[in-house]
Image (cartoon, rainbow, N blue to C red; front, top):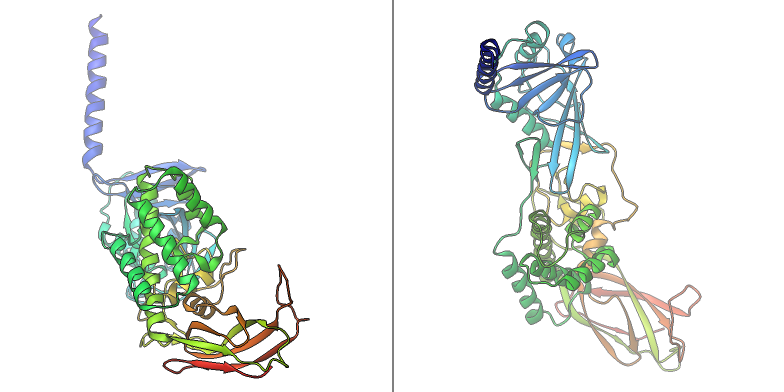
Length: 474
């Protein structure tokens, strides 16, 4: 090989090696071309980009955040908005976040709250406030570098960037533990070694202490125990398939709130089998953690606010339209007592968390589902209101009001057949109930109550230590 070729090749390799060495240790500002305009991002040594300035923020990954470039020409105008774009990953999937907030002027304190800030996560919008913001000096440093020195490195305060953006995200969701790797991550609490023993203990107490078991509560507990068994890899493929069929066909109140998310159901059921992937186990663990919290909440309500008693039917034979009668109970003034200084009261008197999050990966598919999760004390409460939804979202699948959901979950039979002269043992939350009695047609194999039926109605009180009600008149 000629000497000149060898010399050229040697020089080329030397340049490549030096270039690679320099790029791995220096802090730099990188400039790219996009749509005819430069894209600049601040990077720290041996890390991914921190803030990238782009003409039109894109749904891309790799930087802590993306800031609109026109902000650099309006730093002195407090009426102009900053548009920050973030990529967020949660156990449910990927989310795009757009944050809109005023540009701080040079006289604005960095501790001042953003009372008019707006956050969009996927298709949901809410206002939020935060005591954290980037200082005008920091933004001016970024913009000056982008405008005048795109080829020179600048120092970036990585800690400040993480603190400010984390504060924005936590204003919307107290329940996520936020961190940054390639994108922002939302980590949620998971089940642990105590989960199965807790479920076993709830079932043991229910069997030993309650002579009548609320159907919906029992159903939630059974499904949760089944999922706990799956997490322990003690399930066959046919059992897994059967479980997914149960999820799909269950009524809203028959499942724990955390099992209601359609994306969650689809994700775990697409990977059901004897050996679960780590992602599926992670999803199951998160939902199971919240299911245990919900069951503890309902268990306490049953023990503290329900009474075991009897309803007896003693109608005169000459006035009773039939021997067997259908009784339907409707709660009118049923208030589960909860003592919580940070709670507020709904119209029906049920105490719920006052300042809960606006967004959660499992529950924010529906504002009414978020309300149920807050009522069950699954969502963390706070001392101040940091966010407020401006466009509450609803699925096609309706969720009941929180008061009805709680009462239904801790109530035993509210519709039943009683033979005249006999009694029915019931476990009901304390309060007042209205009743309607329907005459059952003789020899009917199928029947449903209707307005055309011959009926009788009245009220019963269920507040005594051992309620006993006798219905004597038609």
